[in-house]
Image (cartoon, rainbow, N blue to C red; front, side, top):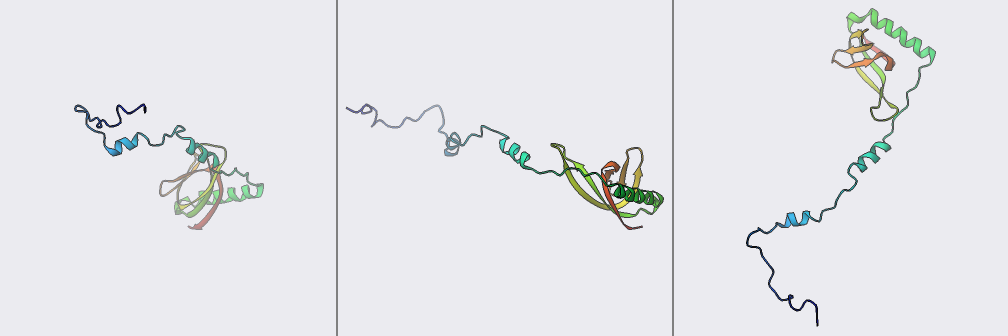
Length: 135
């Protein structure tokens, strides 16, 4: 004798008090569960590469100082320039080199930064090179 003979031919029970669950909600019960939330993001962050900051050679540092002196003398002309600088990474060691172009608005001695006409600022200590295009 089969263990389920007494119930196998009974009609399916339908509750009179609770509405039937939709197929979408039933399927959601069996959706995959992400037990390691944030794990993929952590792996991606670890794999992201950064560059190390290079120190300027003495002759490059002297050339940069001469360019800064020139910019200070010609600040009122608002020269157009391209500034290459190092931006440290906020999450890990190293960072990346970036170049920004624009017209020089000011050299802020208090915050030790170059201020461009668009409002962008670059810390003087992070500047690697300055190319001056037009005065």
